[in-house]
Length: 240
Image (cartoon, rainbow, N blue to C red):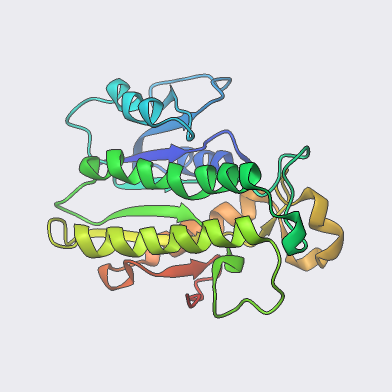
């Protein structure tokens, strides 16, 4: 049986790379690409659906364009914000904390993905392994935080990791084959990382294609015992 995949945030660097990788996978039957950008052409295996991660009604109504009997083998949530190259940028100190910017980052990085879970979880396959993967960040690990700063981004990813854990506990009661994980993609050459690339060693700066390939390998190797955990691009488990 061919697999069905949903990519949330498919127009971003990693979301697009994951989509391109899966298009070349003969085991994948259809890919639903959810995004605010609708520039990619459709075909019999790729369907574009509008979704605004900041709007609950948009998230809910996006599924009106998916057949009601659809069962996803993989839901990959690739949305996120670190900066917008304008007024939002990681805080360097307490004095940089701003309520509106804090709300924006948490809305995109935590609340939006949580709502994706609310509406997409009922579409997960139950008879076989299914994976609900969320892009997270190593800086969301409280135990690994040695530098401080980046208040809103760190907090939003820490909160997301807790949401993932909650999903894994509740859904295990009704779908023992579902796996919920957070994934750290490494430092990927993209709009999100661009202002910080000069501080990253060349060997540690990945192309979106490489990161996508490694993340999909991690996903393929997951078992139900991994549900609720947080993994790096190389399969290393990151502690909360």
